[in-house]
Image (cartoon, rainbow over all chains, first blue to last red; front, side, top):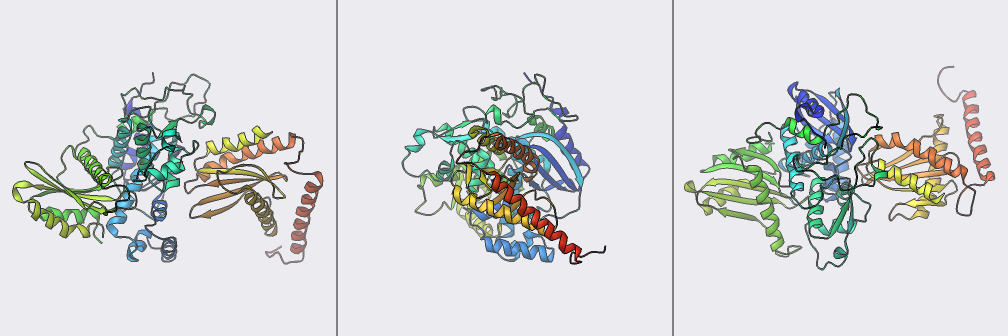
Length: 296
Length: 122
Length: 161
C-alpha cells in the first residue's frame, strides 16, 4: 500500500512558495492534464488547462455571448491593449459581477482539473506578460485547493469506484430505454456519450465545466444510466503506474483521489519529480482547520 | 465597477443580515461572500444549491412555468433568503442572505434583498 | 496493416488530451482510415490532401523548407494536418482544449510509425500510392524549389547578397 506524507508533497510546496513569496508569473505544470497557473502577488489570477473548458468555451457554447460580439471585444482589447474583461463589460455583453463570478467558477474548475489529475513536474517562470480574462485581484490559492478537495470528496461520496476525468463513459441499455427528458444538462451528456469520450471530453463537447459534468455522470452512474471505465492499460499516459483493474479505488483514507501504487521497478524515475499522491499536495495547502477560509 | 465582494457587502447594512453569499448552483461552490461565515458554510452552500436544483426538478423538465425565483427557509432563529440571479450558463447563480430572525421578518427581509439583488451581477 | 494504422491513430488520440478524431488519407485525396465519429471521411480526405499540397507549396514559395504541419484554429477547435512522407496525410481533429504542446511532442513518433507501416505493406486497392504518383509528386516539389532559387538569383528574393 502506498503511503503518502502530505507534509513532503512537493507540488503543494511549490505552490505555497509562490504564495508566500508573492510570486508574479506562471507555474507551468506537466502532467495529465497539466496546465498553467498564473499568479500575481501570490494570488491566482488565471488557470489554463486542456482538462477543463475555458471561460470562452463556456460563454460561447452556452450562447451567453455571441461569437461576433466576442470577436469584436477580443479585437478591440488587442488593439487598444485593454483587458478583455473590461471590453466585455463596457460593451454591455455581460455584467461585471456576473463576469467575475464566471471567472471564479472557471478558474476553480481548471485548478480542480489540474490538481485532481496527475502531476509529473512543474517549473516557475517570472513573467509580467498580461493575459486576457484575468481575475484581478486574484484568488487565494489555499481556498482554490480547498475547493478542489471539497469537489473530490463530493464525488467520492457516491457509490462505486472513484471517477476520473479520464474515464470513458458509455450508456447502459436503461439509458436507451429512458422516457421523458431528464433535464439539467443530462440529456445532452447522454446524447454525446459513445463509450470512447472521456468525462473530460464530454465536458468540452457539452460546453459545461469539468466538475459539473463529472457530477452529472456520477449521479447518472448511480441511477444506472451510464457506466464508466478507466482508460485501458495500453492507453494509459506514459510513466503512469500500472494499476490492475479494480485497484483504483481509494481506501477511504485520503480525499478519495486515485492512489498511485508503488513502482514495481522498471519504470523510469525522472529526477526531482513527485511520486506523491496528488491528494497529498491538496492537503499541503489546506490549513489545519478549513473553517473560516474565505475566497477573497 | 464594484467587485462582487463590494456588492455583497451592501447586504450587511440591512438590519439583521449576518452574511450574504453567492453560490454556483451546478457545483455548490461559494463564489464570493461577505459577512460572518459559519464553520458549516461550505456544506450549507452545497445544500442550498441542491435545494434549488430539486425545486427546478419539481417544476418539471423545461420548466414551463418559468425558473425558480427563490427559496426562503425559516428556522427558529434565522431566515435564509435565497434568490436565483441567473439560470445560465451552467445552472446559474444563487444569492443566499442569512438574516437574524429577531431583527426582521420574511416579508421585510425579502423586500430588502430584492432591492439589492439586481446590482450583484451587474 | 489495418490494425497497425488504426492502432497508431488511436494511440495518439489516447496520449494527447483533446483529440476528438483522426483520419489518414492518401495524397490524391482518398480516405485510408478514419476515426472521426461523424465527419464525412471522403470530404476530409479530399480537403486534407488539397490543403497539404497548398501548404507545402506555400512554405516552398517563401523558402521555408519542409512543412511540419498546417493548422486551422476555429472557435470550436483545431485541425492539424501532417505529411506522412510523400505518401499520405494525417488529419488530427481536436476540441478547444487540445493540448497542442503534447501533440507536437507525440506526433512525430506516430508519423514515423504510420510511415513505416505504409512502407512495409503491399499495395492494395484501398491504399495508396503508385510509384508513378510518388515520382510525379517529387518532381513537382523539385520544380517549385528550383523556381524559388531562380527568382532569388535574379535579385527578386530581397536581402543583401
